[in-house]
Length: 167
Length: 252
Image (cartoon, rainbow over all chains, first blue to last red; front, top):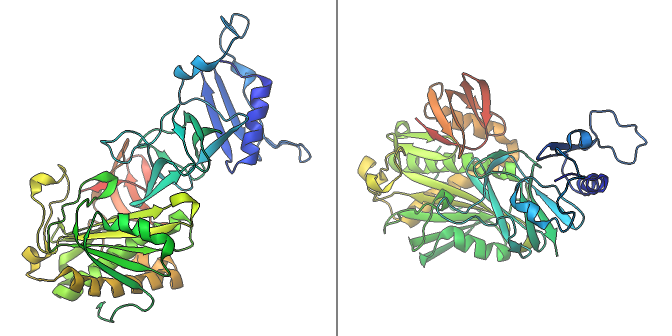
């Protein structure tokens, strides 16, 4: 899977309109860092105060030998967690530092997984800080296209947790 | 500090014979409540602890939830872990007269003679885009503790207030102690900030200065329990340096 210039532009646009300060996206053979107001010294008049380090390491073979430039849907199964937000998608970030839980309890199924259809208000995960449990809910209906943190992981304030393709 | 100043002004009180769980009722009631309200159930049919763990709630034990709607960010709401623990300790001391028997385990466990006598479950209620509410669920083994075989291996052994101290109270009588104690610590937090709450909590902390283990779902840190910082995070001095830990289970 490779990133086109349009992909990167779309991601930057999404991040700009969200409350996230930084997104790190790792794909096979490529790493993209998008940082708001980055330390890289973007000119003050620049329209997008972000910098990207994407194209540097395209996947071996690039696009020329792509067996099918056709619908890219099946890619999802290769890297379910490595995905940024694109047009029509929103990133859900953590409202607090804490432990991220994908399930209501260790014996239950996850609230959502990649591909889950969700309604507005549906629970996505829980975050615990000092034994205070907060259920994070979907602001709008759609489909979960990426889960960006692992069960039991310590997450930071504003860390991206999910990408949702909105209806 | 004795918690005998009467029922706190402006705080509601609802007593039920049976509920599924007091935190569940808190979630249902939150949108319509005018002010903070204690919800007490003499019996819970679906009592639960953190991470969905079942909570044993035999008749005579205490199960109640304070639901309120503080307009604060989550990290600030979480400081109620310390408010609730201190309030519980005050209520216990008031009814037993034994301040030396109770200690606090980070962040909100209250130990009696080293055993687990109570559990606190805090939840933010987010339903349907309404303003966030906070549910502080409190379970106390007033009369009976669950069998040791029923708690998780490695967990603190359960004890009951009656077996350890001889104190024999109804849940309603205990609530009459807990509610004013909670209101007093809540008022300190909102008036003076976390500093006096932190200081009082540290004065009663179990294993301060000793080696403890903090476990999250994925990581484990062992180190000397130095203090808690001004966000309430546990500060451990480990071989890897000083760690601020905002969420974990502590093991002695």
